[in-house]
Image 1 (tube, rainbow, N blue to C red):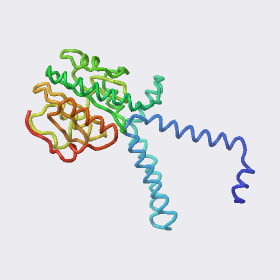
Image 2 (cartoon, helix red, strand yellow; image 1 turned 30 degrees about the vertical axis):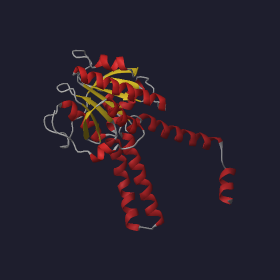
Image 3 (cartoon, rainbow, N blue to C red; image 1 turned 60 degrees about the vertical axis):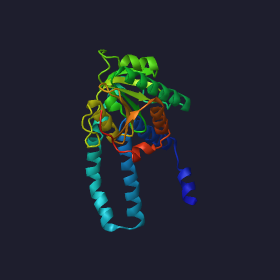
Amino acid sequence: MSDILWIFSHFQLRDLVDIVLVTVMIWGLFLLVKGTRAVSLMRGVMLLVIVVVLASNFLSLTAFSWLIRNALPALLVAVPVIFQPELRRALERLGRGGGLISFSSSETARIKVTRHVARASQLLAERKHGALIVLERETGLQEYVDTGVPMDAEVSLELLLTIFQPNTALHDGAVIIRGDRIVAAACILPLAETSHVPRGLGLRHRAAAGITEQSDAVVTIVSEESGDISAARHGRLVRHLDESRLREILRSSYKRQLHDDFSQQPAQNGS
């Protein structure tokens, strides 16, 4: 108690300014990487650092503490290299004056989004118009948003149908939805690295599996050849869906629940 009183008795205005500046810098760093995959990586690094510090201090591990102290300079060099793509994009956004703070959509808005996406998928399937719709969740997809055409438009049935109209400029690529906004269209997604995608399926399905391998996004795919509706999560596909089934999957995903289909139903073959 006396130590705390001593600290406060010697506390000055410049100390307060010092603390505020450090807090603002840390807060700003989190805002810069917000919306990218670096957030998950940063959480992992912070958790690892906390565990290492607690283990070395409370367990008195001499050799382990020596290893950590000597590895720290290498870690300080490695972190900027690991986060280089995300930091570059974030600084570019800051330089363009783009907003760094995003607000989560309400539950009502999310239900509206799932309804529009499911309905649009059904209509596109009936017309055999190919579509690829990505719903961003916890893992930021800004690096893929940057590959497309920025839109920042409210999700609507009419807009989704227009984007995926054949022979239009934006139909050949993915639409990425963040919250209740279409942030970009004609986005380029990574292709799947695993064998979960059945043979005979095209690039849309491989791209859907690819983006869900690298993030927690949920993707809706409409086949241009067969008109089949599919959904992807965690690199796996669930196929032959109708509007109501797709809507259930999207709603459960927004609630952060892994639907039984993705853990129990194997990938299906066929067109």
